[in-house]
Image (tube, rainbow, N blue to C red; front, side, top):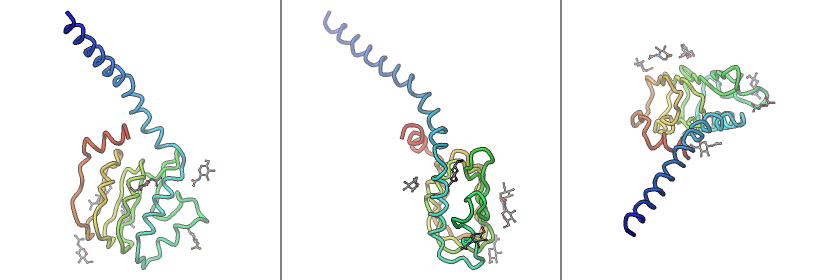
Length: 162
Ligand SMILES: *[C@@H]1O[C@H](CO)[C@@H](O)[C@H](O)[C@H]1NC(C)=O
Ligand SMILES: *[C@@H]1O[C@H](CO)[C@@H](O)[C@H](O)[C@H]1NC(C)=O
Ligand SMILES: *[C@@H]1O[C@H](CO)[C@@H](O)[C@H](O)[C@H]1NC(C)=O
Ligand SMILES: *[C@@H]1O[C@H](CO)[C@@H](O)[C@H](O)[C@H]1NC(C)=O
Ligand SMILES: *[C@@H]1O[C@H](CO)[C@@H](O)[C@H](O)[C@H]1NC(C)=O
Ligand SMILES: *[C@@H]1O[C@H](CO)[C@@H](O)[C@H](O)[C@H]1NC(C)=O
């Protein structure tokens, strides 16, 4: 008699926890996009971090990335009209030398980035795998090491629950 009641207690506990999980799961997934809308400073910081890892810029692109101009008007940067978040970053053909900052993973609204014929080296940041809106990533003629990272369940879980 005691054993079944004990079992039913744990199963009640289990279903309660499951219920909590179900209750909170949608709010976590809803919280993800709205929290990424919070503030417009993150994208600027990410772009500045990308700039900081460019060691040579013969065509002077990065000098246009300065504080006298809003980052949405920096060359090669395109923002969405409503939310002032970067949606496209096209650094192609600017002969940039350096590496690609992992901070690119903070451009949460990024839909596409072109890095053709930039001379960037090093690792292609795995943080790119966190960009759920990313539709294209054009990087022919670079010197990246490593491979493209598929979005893993772990990064998805981090995005939604982290
Ligand atoms: C952030 O948004 C506010 C309000 O729209 C604006 O005044 C401010 O200049 C923006 N800052 C950046 C860095 O975009
Ligand atoms: C800042 O960028 C603008 C264009 O985006 C450019 O006209 C200006 O000369 C730049 N300022 C400096 C100090 O480089
Ligand atoms: C990126 O910019 C280059 C010129 O700098 C242009 O030729 C190319 O079409 C652009 N790519 C995309 C995907 O916008
Ligand atoms: C952006 O990304 C970097 C590296 O991926 C991280 O260290 C940083 O805390 C992130 N957030 C902001 C707001 O810059
Ligand atoms: C680069 O991306 C653009 C935008 O989607 C695409 O139209 C173009 O075909 C791509 N270029 C290459 C070489 O894949
Ligand atoms: C890559 O760049 C080199 C040197 O500029 C050029 O000779 C080669 O054709 C390029 N390859 C592609 C696939 O664009």
